[in-house]
Structure formats: structure tokens, C-alpha cells
Length: 250
Image 1 (spheres, rainbow, N blue to C red):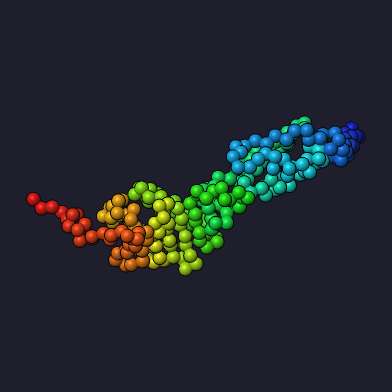
Image 2 (cartoon, helix red, strand yellow):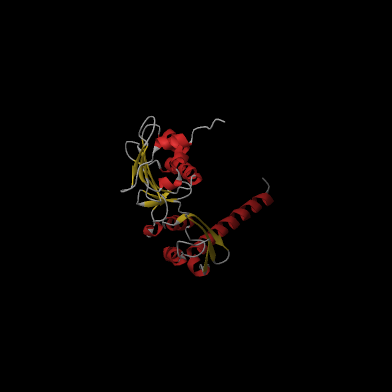
């Protein structure tokens, strides 16, 4: 190695060392030299106030722009119940940019929390405000599966102008549905989907007018189902309906 090359390398090392110590000094003095003057919070805010996010951030932006712990800030904001995701980045020379995606509540879960579009539970403070959402109740850990089943049940019921209010699965895996009009549909645990489909196929035989008089549909039978009527209502004359639905021969 010639002398010129040696001098060049030594000079480069000296510059790097000076730059490193300079950067450490900038970091050490960051709160004074590069303070965070602006925090931009962006997103569609329907359920959470920006002030709540600001309260979480107050103590975490006092160390300056380059000393701000981005991961810690993200983790702190993520702990707020209505946050689905958060992204934080530094913006030169004096700002933090925070982008928020809020949770979208789809159904109530076990009366204790809410499920989002992905079947993930979150527990906001104001859960009582969402009593109009359908309720799913079932074994913990089955949230996503039960949500998908409920979506299918809901679509099928909507085709018959019925609205699902509750879908419950107990520890024995027995299914139970409650409609918005108060009718309870008991499916049990043996082939509940097949029984549900059988009910829908025969629903036209009952008719919407007669169905308004029903309080319970018990599908826990292998070849049929039982109807419980509102007090004072007459049962359906199934023989008469069978005669009415016989194919006519000309």
C-alpha cells in the first residue's frame, strides 16, 4: 500500500469517526435541536377521538424527532380498543406522521366484545351502543369459524325475508338461532345445517302470515320439526295445506 492510499484511508476513517460522534451528539441533543413540533394523525375516525390518540403520544414525542421510539409509539396506539392498525413514520424536519385504520364492528361476541370483519375480537368501552348488531355466542377460539357460518345463515334467512338476531353454539356444539321478530329456531347438534336447509325448503308451506304466529321452531327431529304457537293462535292444518299443494290433474 503506497503512502497516498494510506493517508486517504486514514482520512476516511477519521471522517467516519467524526461523523459518528456528531450523529451521537445530534441524538443526545435531539429534543432541543430537532424537536417534534407537529404530529399528523390521518384516518377515518368514526368511533375514536383524535384526542385519545394524542394523550397516548404526549410522553413519547418529547425526546426529539430522531429519538422517538417508532415501535413503542405504534404499540401504544395499537392498545387503544378501536385501532385495527397503525403506521408511524418520521417526516423531516419536525413531524411525525401517524396513519390509523379503525376497527369495523360486524357482530357482538358473547355479549362481552365485538368481532371485526376478520372475526377478530376487540372490546371497546361503549359496547352497549352496538346492541342492534347480531349476536354470536360460542366457544372461545371459534370466532372466525362461527362468523363465517353466521354469514351463510344470514344470507339464507334474508332470502326468506327473515332477519337473524342471534346465533348461539353451546359447549355441546348445539346450534340455536333467534330471529329479529323473536322466533327461536332450535337446530341441535346433529347435522344442524341439513336441518336448517330442510326448514327453509318447507317454509313456503307455512307461509309468512302463519309464521308470524310461531314462537319456536324445533328442528331436532330426524324427519320433520315441531312448531310452538303464540298463545291463543291455532295450529296449522297440515292436511289442508297438503291438499292445497297437491299437483292438479286435468
